[in-house]
Image (cartoon, rainbow, N blue to C red):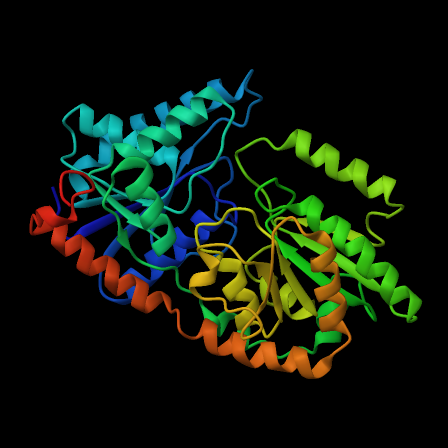
Length: 396
């Protein structure tokens, strides 16, 4: 077993939060002199962006499974079978999701690895039996657990009696602050020239509370139209392994019932390449993120780094770095009328926008991937030095 090599594992090549975390952490660890290799399941031949560390995409059949349960079981088996061939190559195995964590659990149960690390971003409320089991095992079985916020550290302790280390996410501020194109040039790239732009990232999902944002958008749009202004809504991201078909259908039915039009009022952009993300953020006048549950809310910091004023849910863990009326406007997640009012407030007040842009930039600069990576190195060294206080269970 190689003690100085790190394997970071994720389940996808798409720009989901956990995948973004994996790649950014891997690159920052490498910049600090660590030897890192990323593993992911993938039907494509590459990640959503260029990656500056070695990686392996484990071939995964692009087929229609009869059920979500069958898909999850198959993915875990594929991951497990592949990793058997590399167990002697690494001193640290670190999973960022439930599928890769279950694969590592299988390897440990076979006696092929001694221990593994799991970063827990949040706990989802799944309905699929296989996903429920996958998530539960990925939470309670790892030898070492990292939470990305104090809130989830507390929840893991209360719900599962787990001891988790807290290492916050970072944000690559330079990716967003160095953009040179004007806001109108960025808007033109997304065919929304001349309009006020509301931006959301995370796709159309229950956890992202997209339907609440839809209702707020309709109200704010009507108010701006009375003033002779146009408001469009860009929705980026959202590709995921999990099936939110029913929620998406409800969303699109609500779009029609409100008299709104896709590709005129609302633009569902899907997955956006890393190269285009700075332009997408730069096109926005307001960033709306009324999420119901988050591990940390990395896209909020990305919006702040992009000089976009933020409206977000006043929920933990985001209140660990967001202060209402100081660096963001906070709302109760389901209060679409308040969200609409705050969208209109920001769009009608340039001085208020400037205030939140300045404070948001200062907030984003407090969280660097270099700092997060160094904390991971210290954590890994503690494991290799057999520090029992780092164990997820058995120590209070």
